[in-house]
Amino acid sequence: MCIACILLGAVAEATAFRIAKFDEIDFCSQSIGAVLASMATLALVGQTKPPDNVLDTGLISGIAILGVGGCFAFA
Image 1 (tube, rainbow, N blue to C red):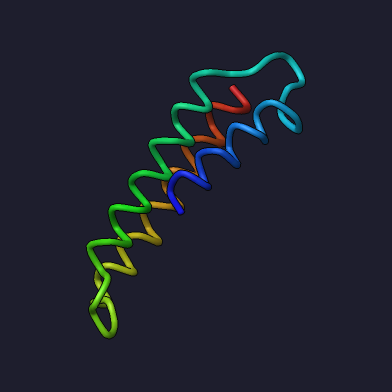
Image 2: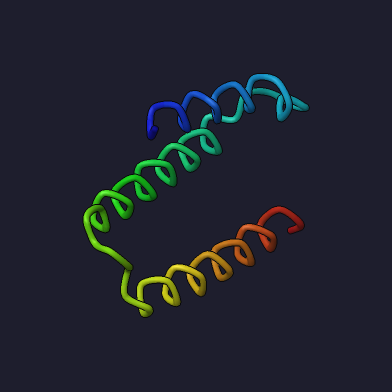
């Protein structure tokens, strides 16, 4: 699944997001995100329900990272 997400990011960078050119930095960031999400998923495999603090921390981190990305995008 991780490889599929990385390949989907490469296709998106080469087609939909190629307004200027293929952005290697953006592709690298997407790939790192896919690997981190896969690692988090594998850490929780086998557990019936992840602890609530894992979900809360993930949500707060995701919102913070989205905000920082938005600041860089509009700067």
